[in-house]
Image (cartoon, rainbow over the protein chains, first blue to last red):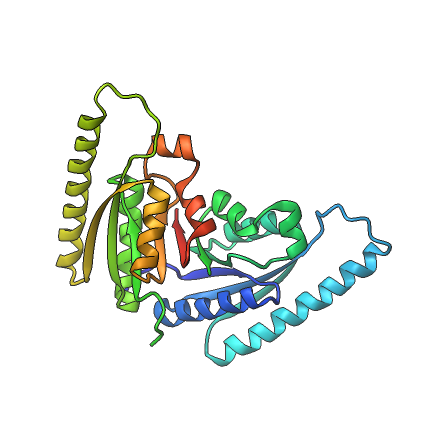
Length: 141
Length: 141
C-alpha cells in the first residue's frame, strides 16, 4: 500500500462544514491508515473592538475545547489515532505552523466554516491555506 | 468500505506538477477503487495575438492528445479504470462542466502547472477551481 496521507491535519470549528471534513478524514483513516491531528484555533488577529475581549476569548477557548473533545471521542471509538490541539493566533498561520512542525501530508479543510467573521475579514481560510500550505490540501464541499 | 471518491477528475497538462497529481490519483484508485477521468483542456480564452492562432491551437491539440494517451496507458496498465477527455475553451469552465456532467466526487489538481501563461493571465487555476467547484478539490503539492 501507498505511503501517502499518513498524517492528516483537520482544522475544525464546530460547524456543519467541519463535521463533513471529519467524515472525509475518517474515510482517509480507513483507506490509508492515516493518523489525524484535529486543531481548533482561537482567532486572535481580528481587530474587533469588544467590550470584554478577555471574556470573548475565554468563551472561544471553552468552545474549542469542547469541539475537540467531542470529535476526539467520536473518532477514537472508530479506532482512529487522533491528536487534538487548541491553538491561539491567526488561524491560517497556526494551521500552517502545525502542518510544518508535525510534517503532515495533507490538510483537510471545509470550503466554508472556520469562522464566518474570520472569513468576512480575512477572506476564505481554505483558499489562503491552499495557496501557502507546505503540503497538499483537500477542500471538502 | 466508504462510497467517497468513486469518480475523480484529474486535469493534466504534461507538466511535472500533473505527474504528481497522477501519482496521487493512483493512490486514490488503489485505496477507494476510484475510476479516473483525465482531462486536457486546450485553453482558448487567452487573448494572445498570435501570428497563426490556428497553428498554435493545432499544436496544443496534438500535445494534449499525446499527454492523455501516455497517461492512459500508464494507468490502465495498473488496472485502473480511466477515461480521457480533450476539451477546448476556458480551462476552469471546462473542468467544472465535466465535474458536473460526470458527477465527479473529487477534482484532483496540481497547485502549479495547467499552463504558465494561463496562470499569469487568469490567476491560479487550482484556486479558481476550489472556489467554484461543485465537488471537493484536492490541491496536490
